[in-house]
Length: 405
Image 1 (cartoon, rainbow, N blue to C red):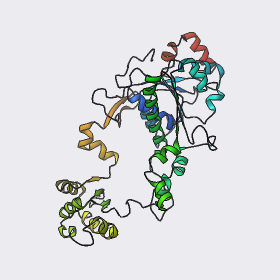
Image 2: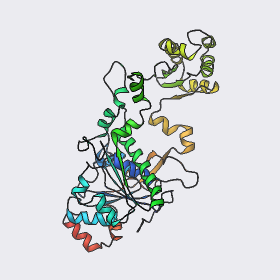
Image 3: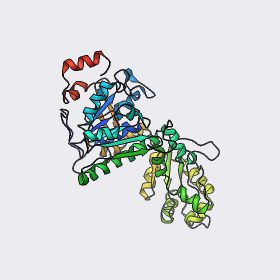
């Protein structure tokens, strides 16, 4: 349905789809990033004065530029509109009338207050798919609560099981709740696009952060409901699954070794020069290794601490033992496998020069996605996009003078 597509049109599997993104920060915009990576024309509406707050987020802002924004904003066209004003709302409604998908992650009811409810938008565009990402979903007693990703991680069950058993519930070092909600939102959007090809009708995709977290919590709920088993924090291990842990090396690195299967453990015992461990009654079976998990971990760590990480990796690979160093960015940028698959790519930034960032995932064999540009400047594409819905230069200048665009 895309009209007035940008000059650098995509050729990925979603080329030809137009997405209007009205969210901010991460849960909605990460969904937009994924759709854009796969070829959709993503038009991002931002406040003219402030833009997406993510433009100012990150531990470092080299030359005033957010490195996080360069990734989450990539492949998007930035349009500025003050959605709190009626005239800008009318323009947004016209723009959404040209779209296949609209993404928003405001508190439920916000779009309705702006005159941009789904019923209103669908009246103009019957095939429109609205992706709504929020903390608690669009209905239910908690729907109006402020719902950041951290809260969804807590209520979805993740925070309770992350960390050391002697410490309070911890967190994963990234905004995993937001990104999980975005992943589920993306899946829902693509499912709705497919269904629309049959019915011709759009629908709402409701992705709640707490439900996205809950959705990946494996058998946590029935374990409690059926057997009364409550999963607890266990640090770097899974109880009774051994050996599967991180172990120190002589050069101050960490390596993860997963040798818990009987045959794999036999090969691990050979690799560390302790073949007798494979037949030792304390370690010969999965159950025995689980019962003696700490003792076994100590034995392995005693050996790995005498080895250089690179040499240890070679030895474990020679014996077909699953293992891998705990990677930091410096490892990712120099690793041969990352390089061969171009897992990290370089994207030219108009201010920062070449910026390394993760590539487009997943990979498709015929119609792979691409990164056409990093996160754009605020309002960089306003004239380009709005001209496609009939707003000329003089009208746009007037809108800007009045703080509407």
